Image (cartoon, each protein chain N blue to C red):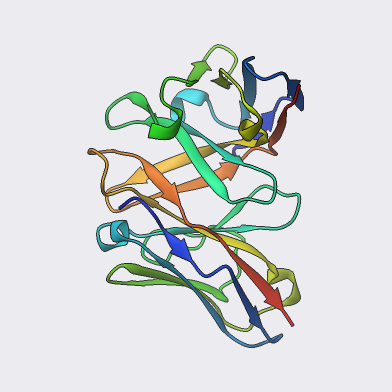
Length: 121
Length: 111
């Protein structure tokens, strides 16, 4: 059973960066494909990016390219999502989740508890 | 198109059947996965692939697909099924192993 535990809530000023962590237990990070999804207050889910095991690289939603970086520390089984140039619209709960790519479908089977990032001056 | 469209809200009487739909071009190529989200909680996977349920998900949840539409059916809805439901799919407009997209979400109310 995979467990994902995320870092605590953050408050940031516009223009700053935030780095959210996601600690894996039950499996090693190298066995998983980690993804990040966010949800603004009262809004729907938005996929930000994740690891594609077929290409061996992390792919990002076009909306976030250039502003988001997803990294992994395999020595501690911790994944990170860093979002830069923050603006008020980035206020959201950020989730890490493990993904499974299959030929005709994709799914996110295990989720972290979420990290609230508030961007406010 | 990389959009997946869902009805904003549906209601169902306790014990009755409700179908939630998700429409988008990518669904002609890929199956959807479905997620249940209750207030203040992380989403939970309920259906993936052609019609697969993760361990622990009741068999009253089922999935189907036709053309550009995927459906999640709850047969015999229970009070605890009241939640927001989101579909998700690989995005056929991306490259191989491309990107992915969530639907707009449907709020299910059990009366």
